[in-house]
Structures are given as structure tokens and as C-alpha cells.
Image (cartoon, helix red, strand yellow):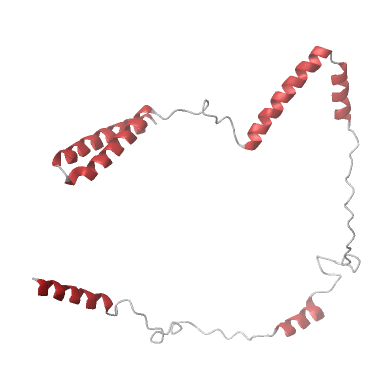
Length: 188
């Protein structure tokens, strides 16, 4: 018995260490350019192309991008560009007049509504979009039951090798889960 075991281990070891001829690749045996046509385009150097472009095709007057020598000068000064201030428009003046014409209680109410709108805009910009836990829809009952029974069926199937009763309970719970899933799909 011991000799048979050692013989079996030796054969497996030799088989595992042998070279796999099926998966070996011979780079020098295959020529992939056999069926391809050869292109006979003359190759030109970069210097030849540059001479052609500067001599014939592109002149400064014809160029869509015209760059002058003044544009190519750089400066190392640390001056920031001055911000452009816009003059108050007629709409801004009208809103200012309306606000100044309001009474004290109207101004207070206007400020409260303005603050509320700003908070709503911040929520929208932040990406909340009213998806707080109170506003979200709760998972549908049939879908929840289908997930629960599916998980139970999976768990019981793991114990199917221990006893056949686990396998039977797994199949039953899987069928119940499928029924709930079909009910959920029918409602959608």
C-alpha cells in the first residue's frame, strides 16, 4: 500500500513538472506578415517636411493662427489682473428700490424666505436632492421577503451534505423566495 502511494505521488510529481507542449509558443516558427501587402510609400525625413511647409504651403498671412513677436514675450512680474467691476444695472436698482420700500416686517419675512431658498440651493448643489432617510422609499415588502428567503435557501443548501432535511428546506425556501420575487416583478 505504501509503495503504491509513493508510486502515485512520483507519477503526479513528474506530470506536474513536465513541460506543457500544448501551451508552449514558438516565436520563430510563425510569420505573421505572409498575407499582408507591402506598402511602398516613400519615407521622408522630418527636415524635408519642414522645408516644404515653410517654403510652399503655409505663409504667415495665410495662417489661421497668427502670432506676433509681442505675444511671445513672457513676464515674471507677480501682478494679478484687475477684476472687472460691472456697473449696477436697471434690474439691480429696481430690486433695491422695492426692498427699501418694504416695511420692517416684510423685510424680515423676505430675509427668512431668502435664507430658506439659499439652504435649498445648497442642498441641491451638494447632491442631497431630498434623499434623507425620511424621504426615501422603503424597500417593497415582496422584494424584502424574496431576498430573505433566498438567503435562507442559500444557507440551508450549505448544510445539505449534513442531512437531507436541510436540502429539502432549502428547496422549499427557494420556491417561496421565487414566488415573492415574481409577485414583486408583477407589481412593477
